Image (cartoon, rainbow, N blue to C red; front, top):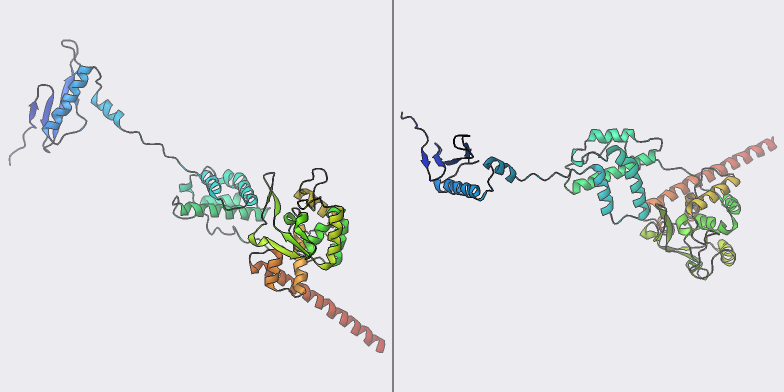
Length: 399
């Protein structure tokens, strides 16, 4: 077998072109030496060429750089020519959470404020610096375990928010699966708070204990099923004494310290509610003595500022009134349960309860019918006990 010979070197007027065994062409030249002082250095092209002509063009370019005084070593130029990769912007869980919230345009301001608190106080401290793409189920489980579970509902809400945010990351194609889905014990529905409805006498007792200028608000909450924010935003023009209705069109809320006046909690919250005829004298008296003047005048307001009653001020007055009436652990919002329960006992249908309360689903209205049935069962139990007691007393008389 014939041995391969050495690669053939083709000398040019300046530099050398070498034919490699692969058929490619390598180019090199010497430069930088001083005769009798320092030998020149051999410089090679950083890559080979497919044709001899291409190799010679490269050599001509090197000679031109030398002649122009702008030459640097080919290896240095090749290194400098490499484009440095752009630094990768590592998106963290916290950064994406804030980005998700900013892009969520269809949530109420009060809900947005709640989400902001959860991100700032719970998601950011535990997971904020974790790269989104590297978040694992184990990290989420640990985060869940580290939350303050003395307030279980708060912890569950924070978890549900994190899970929703991460589903958004899945939809955006940033992660393949949601590492927060189906964490044992997390995000479970909170237990329904069991509260018995007040009876009319108890409602009257709490009403009498409230400041006089706000007493009508208790009656509107109990017998018209209005929410606190709806009551505190009522204006004279919302009361139609001729038809005997209150028009619910707005509600007042607070978010991050700002007073917000807008539509009620849900679209179904915009409604006309009948005022029981027994309440109309109270409504007339309130309009005459306590409401601000003009159709836009507030029914309930802060005496000093003339603005909507602050929810904290209203809550403190309510709790003080409940204490004086001997009622404990009863929220103002629970008055809706009282009114809707008695409406159900009076024969209101699920659909009617839904309209009166401004509920978006019949399921919510059904909750009050369930309470009504339980309340009715208690009534019959007491009736049975009374019948039994009377029967025993009559038998003892006969003996």
